[in-house]
Length: 127
Image (tube, rainbow, N blue to C red; front, side, top):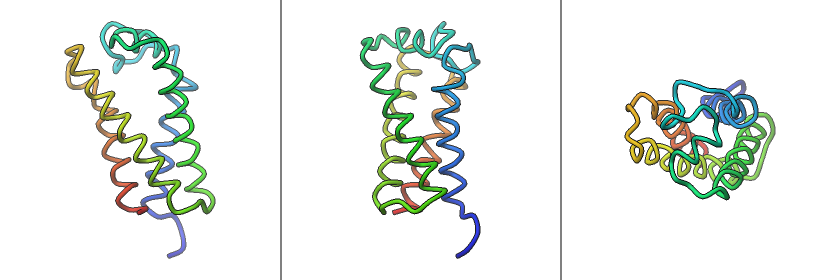
């Protein structure tokens, strides 16, 4: 089928969303930060994660975002897009768990929940 497909739109939304959080808004306060954190790095500390978790998770998310965006724009191997989406889904499960760990209001986990749902849909549609 020609034209934009749902899976392509989801890939762009998830990919651009991840890049926004990790490259544009990482040092800005948002209504969705965990605990009392005002930056992404502070959020990791609020969750009690070791300092090494920040660059590891960041690399996985930015790398996955780039694969998802590239997959929407050009042909990639069949495993690349669902693999990247699966990585994002697992990381979003972890994000939701961290929000629960610090007893955040459930609304703070909404972005991670939406990203989880879209990533799961990408896996299902692209597989």
